[in-house]
Amino acid sequence: MSAASIALSVHDSAQQQTFEIRPLAGAVGAEIIGLDLSLPVNDEAFARIHRAHLDHHVLVFRNQHITPEQQVAFSRRFGVLQVHVLKQFLLAGHPEILIVSNIVENGQNIGLGDAGKFWHSDLSYKELPSLGSMLHAQELPREGGDTLFADMHKAWDDLPEALRKAVEGRSAAHSYTARYSETKFESNWRPTLTAEQLAQVQEVIHPIVRTHPENGRKALFVSEGFTTRIIGLPEDESRQILTELYAHSVLEHNIYRHQWQPRDLVFWDNRSLIHLATGCPSHLRRKLYRTTIQGDAPF
Image (cartoon, rainbow, N blue to C red; front, side, top):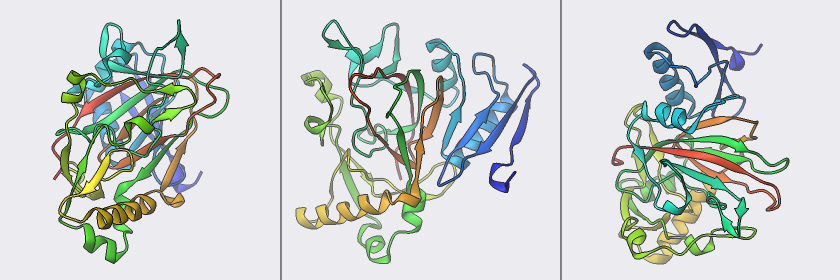
C-alpha cells in the first residue's frame, strides 16, 4: 500500500466502531470506510473526522443508510444549518434538507434538478456563506451525475504573480441571481423567485482572497456561478481578471472527480473548494439530500 493510501484506524469506544480515513489519489479528498453514521459518534471520533475534513477538504462516507433526521443531527455537530431560499424543494418535515433531484412527479420537479451547473461555493452569496455541505445519495443514475471539486487553496498558491497583484486586497460582489436564468440541465428550469425570496438573496461583497478561519490558509473565493464583478475596477478589466481566475482555478491537476456510489454521503468544505455538477441524462433518476452548515464572514 502506498503512503498516500495508508489508512488511519480510529476507535469509537462508545460504539466499538473502527473506521479508516483513506486519502484519495489526486488533488483532494479522503474516504471514511467502516463508520456507521446511524450510530452515535463519540467526541474523539468526531474530532478526527473534523481534522480530516480540514486536511482533505472532501470526505466521502461510504454506504450510509441513514435517515434524514440522522443526516441533520450529524450535520449540526459542525454548526448551525442554513435553509435554502427555494423552499419548494425542501424535504417535507425537514426544512434543513434541500432535495437535489431531476425527478418529475405529477408534472412538478420534486427537487432542484440543475443544482451546480456552474462552478461555485455554496451560499457565497450570503453574508455568512457556508462552512460546508453534506450530500447524501438516495437514487443514482446508471451514467453521469459526477461532481467535480477544485482546491482553491492550491489555486491561490499557484496563482501567477501578475494575477496575484491584481486581486490581493480587493473584494468582489456575489449574487445568487448572477446566472439564475442560465441555469438549466435538460428540461429542468429554475422556478421564478418571489419578491420574498429575492429579498433573502441580496448582493453581498466578500474578499477575493479569504483566509480559512480554522487552518489559516489563503484561498481564492470567486466563482463563475455567483461572482459578478470586482469592486472598484472598470467592467471590462473586472471581467477579464475574473475570467482568468476562473480558468486558473479549474485546471485539471487541481480537480477531484467524485463518481457516486450507492448511499455515499459527501461532506465538502466550501471555504476551501468550489464544485460543479456534471449533470446526467434527464430520463435517468437522480435524487440526493443536501444539508448546508453556516460558516463565518469571510476575511
